[in-house]
Length: 236
Image (cartoon, rainbow, N blue to C red; front, top):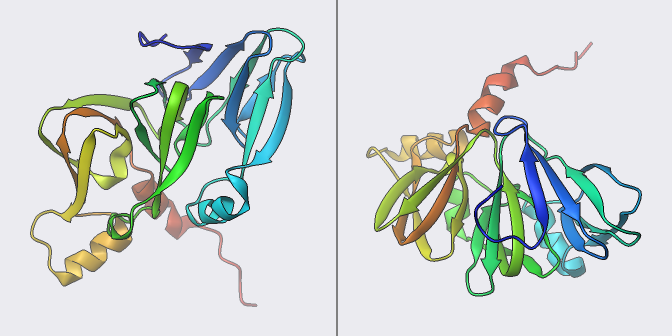
């Protein structure tokens, strides 16, 4: 279990490759889970789905590649366990927000949170475009527990001043860090085009002091590797 404070009892099993998050909800305790994340639960727990942040905000999240719905799980009929499985094989990390700090998470990384955590999108503008990623990140604020996931294992790094990371490996970072996306290796315009489409040659430069979480694998090279093997419908 994480050494940080937690309001909800939990354990992470089978990490870092195929992590399961198991929440031990006490009577009347409530947790918010990304839609489709529930794998199993005790019958004492009830589930209710809802739109995230209302209709207009939800429209923006569709373009961000996020789910339109969240699921609220409440231990209404006594304590029970809730099993949560992320969408891709990898690790799960716990983070506790104390009401003063904030956490920025990749748009597909949200797994679950306590009911007092506000999950919202943060518009990146051209930063998102040039990183080859979604135009949106998630920003978590409030007080309570948050869990996020990765593709591959999660590595935590303490940043003091300046640090450079390939954009495809970023999972989450504290909002005390500033960041700018830039080219690396002096690429030409042709290289810029390749970088945007292929995810290479683009890095994120962090400045300030705070924690950064990276994933040990990049999903986009795997997608590029599998693309030639995709089924193709015959024109006959």
